[in-house]
Amino acid sequence: MLDPVIDPDRIDHHNRPLESRLAAGVEHLAGELDVAGHTSADQVIDALTEFSVAAPSWAVGTGGTRFGRFPLGGEPRTTEEKVDDVAALHTLTGSNDSISLHVPWDDPPDPAALRRHAAERGIRFDAMNSNTFQDNPSTTDDGRLTYKFGSLANTDPAVRRVAVDHNKYVIDLGVALGSTALTVWLADGINHPGQADHRDQFERVADGLRQIHDHLPADWLMYTEHKPYEPAFYATVNQDWGSSLLLAQAAGEKASCLVDLGHHLPNANIEQIVSRLAMVDRLGGFHFNDSKYGDDDLTSGSIKPFQLFLIFGELIRAGDGRLPSLAYMIDQSHNIKDPLEDLIQSTDAICIAYAQALVVDRAALAAAQIDNDAAGAQQVLQNAFRTDVRPLVAEARRRVGAAIDPMGAYRAVGYRAAAIERRGSTTVATGL
Ligand SMILES: [Mn+2]
Image (tube, rainbow, N blue to C red):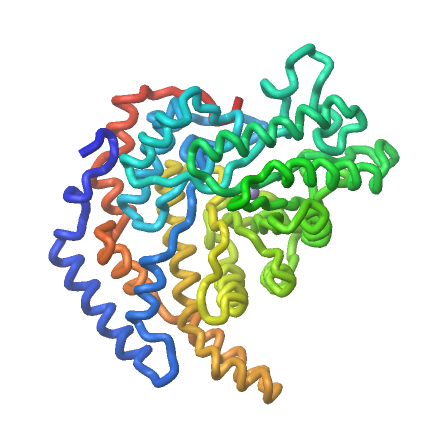
């Protein structure tokens, strides 16, 4: 066993009572779903065993707000230790086999060594994230360069150049790590009406994204990620899916849009946005989280599980019955929970929503839609949403050698206590 990764032999699939309860649950659902033309229990389990959602490197440390941060202890001190935590998570869930880095929060001095470290633990590198929303080594050369007034949208060509160069650097680092995608989220915007010209800002960002796009290797993809506000509180350049689509189209054919569930104004119909972007073949990826008010970064599925189910429904519609091969990642801030417990709960919620969407009787739904049978269509959706698919999700984990009950197993193996022992009880913040 590679310390400190969790030993699969120590987790719960040798727990006989848990195993027999699971077998009974799977058998019951297999009977329920044994309807001609309907997705079977085995098909759902197979789909789940193939599904993976990346964990971001910044989510394995305790998050915080501008009011403060309360470190949990045992948090990763290096990118290698972040990989170790994601490997532990994957051992328990069987559904998190990749990590997404954020540069320069992660800036490994020896990428080849980090790649080996991750490969030994069965972890791949998901999309790379470039950070031009705070001053960092890319801007501090002479003290004159700063992202205070934007990066790609900045009026100063020298600042725009370092922002483009930083993105190229992140792509090159990603190539060394075996990643194949770049996600660009920009803080660029306007805090005060009149401060900058909306159109000029947009055109400068489009030009910068084109230059970054031109640096992508042939097999790479690029994602533009929108967000309506924060840190710009009057206008953000890439503020909604329409702006994101225009920017992706301007950047080039390898660019598409990434939907972060928390990056919408309250009550936005995210499942409809998913449908629109998929329709024009510019849906690239997802950042899963949940929210009550804004970019709250709460546990996936904890506030609006029905919305998550409907989103998976649109994805399966877009993939003609299968989940399209997009970049799926959890993007959350774990302020008061143990980050690994929050990631376990999020992964579980995402898998449940996916399984519920798979058991929608799509033929019956299509027939109800053609007949304008609104009540019948709702019945079809609710039948799926109210199906307790948890045994199928647990069975998928069991079949890949992960835990039947990942949260129980995580607590039973004492991972956090061991991490505090190894790494110390206070650790640095995830960011710079
Ligand atoms: Mn995000």
